[in-house]
Length: 193
Image (cartoon, rainbow, N blue to C red; front, side):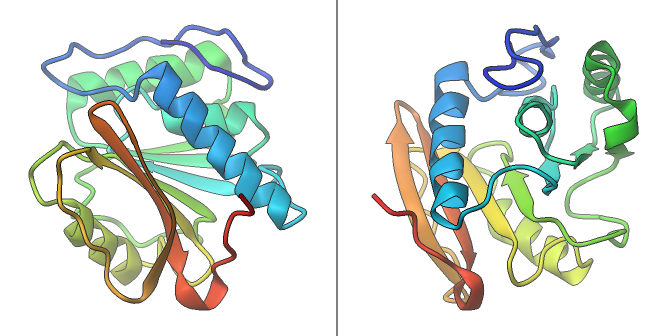
């Protein structure tokens, strides 16, 4: 696995064993970040200075890709200790320790947020019904609030309906993976397509 674009383009990341995680494929990450770039550009904005959360972080590829593209800070949740160790190694490999804050924790049992996230990556294990429970936990602990974008990765076959308080502005399938980008209705601006 590698960083696709930005400051750390081409840098390799360690990946946990397949039995422990399901990393987002390079082509899916590329498509995802293209959608995000279009969204931010439509607002006259970019990744610069964004604060990002990579829940269910695994290798940290999503949060680290955001840093490579100009995000100011990335937070990571990972509950599996051996996988968490790989996450720390990837952060050290890119020398971005000062921009990262990691938590060895379950995404459903969170500490209170030090600040609200601009962008949340939510890539839980497929088929366990964790998306809505995690969103509730993120909102309850102030990790997410009005104005936060959320990127959800689920199985292309998973039937997922977000609460009416969210507006979906992208819902696309890439092979066996479905990517949903949404935000709270009051602050959602649609991608210009």
